[in-house]
Image 1 (cartoon, helix red, strand yellow):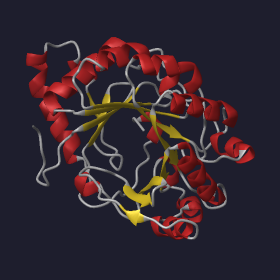
Image 2 (image 1 turned 90 degrees about the horizontal axis):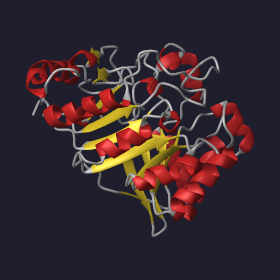
Image 3 (image 1 turned 45 degrees about the vertical axis):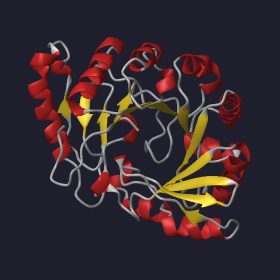
Length: 322
């Protein structure tokens, strides 16, 4: 396997099915315009070929489909079917949940047992201000149906001062009641926020502030974190768990094992790097012929990883695989 001097290698692959999204979240895009599909997005067959090659050459063990919004993509069905035959230890999906109720039979039929749903507030007016698309009730309906179907659900929430910080405790209470696990994600220096440092500083909420806030209502204890995990995880007595992805406060770059494939065929080894590596030219070659060049691309992508901490990037998160 390909590894760097820190012993890091790629174990987890995140694949952006499409750059299109039916939301325009404030922390993702600055102007309120929804992201649209790129003109040069890979076909389902080409994307499956890319995944198969990366599983073989990089030793990928876990695959997560993301976007944009993956439930918008017509490629989802064929890719779920194809990926389910690759012997991966984990196959999952991240969605904003707007189409979850409608697409749930497809996910269940493909054997999806675990999803992450991005939901930043339970308040309808705040939802409209942050997501700038969709509606809260549709997401809650999809969550309820997925829960009843036995899918393991994590809720991804980005707390922001002045927008939804007052929703952290209601969201945690909701998740504990429903059997979901809340993941609180620190605001990241990505996309327009990489240059708008004043906005980032004004809205940023640190890991310690979140722990202090939660501690006002709940007693919790830290859990052991598996290797390669991005989240610090905590147990609330017998009620459940929550996690914090503290990209700024407690960087996890030294153990990062993620590789991202964009919908247009570009490999991204690190969200904090502007470098990308085009895989598309290799997809028509036999694997025996493509292995050497692919190893070189993977070596370059691995070398893009930060040694200690995230330093910021102009990349738009939803365009590179969530």
